Image 1: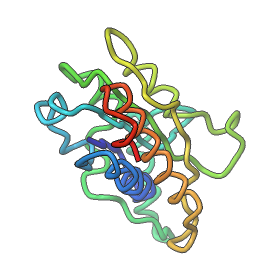
Image 2 (image 1 turned 45 degrees about the vertical axis):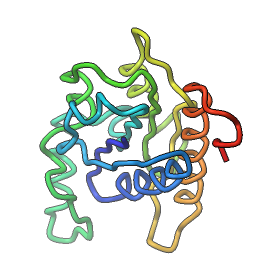
Image 3 (image 1 turned 30 degrees about the vertical axis):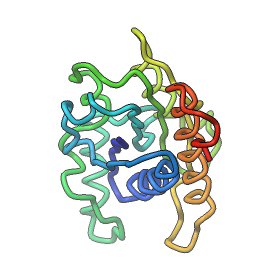
Length: 180
């Protein structure tokens, strides 16, 4: 299951690309965080969680409100995703009951130095860690695509998803012939 938070659609596009890569290893469900039912997630072999980087980490209610304000400015060309300001991955993880043992984390961020933007993926990974949970691939950052023709990050997200799916099958003990 891929659970994502997206304000303007960039993280959704990356989540969908990750899901395409994961499909090499099994069936995949992609859900915006506001629709991510914990019972469905609990039965998954792997949960991939991602969101946009806001103020050096995961979004907060105040940063989602600021994104909404930016989108409603008269000169803005931004369009908010449906229900994007309701709940973020931070709150979703904190409220979660039992989650799958295997997980992966990703984020999207502006095209700037990481020391300047920070990383929501790093924070998501830290929050998911613990107990018997295991990260199957290192947390990943994808640059927000500038336009619908900039596919390099989408391709990279698809490959990261494929690697996560193969790593999941390996951890679950499936033979190499089933791992692509």
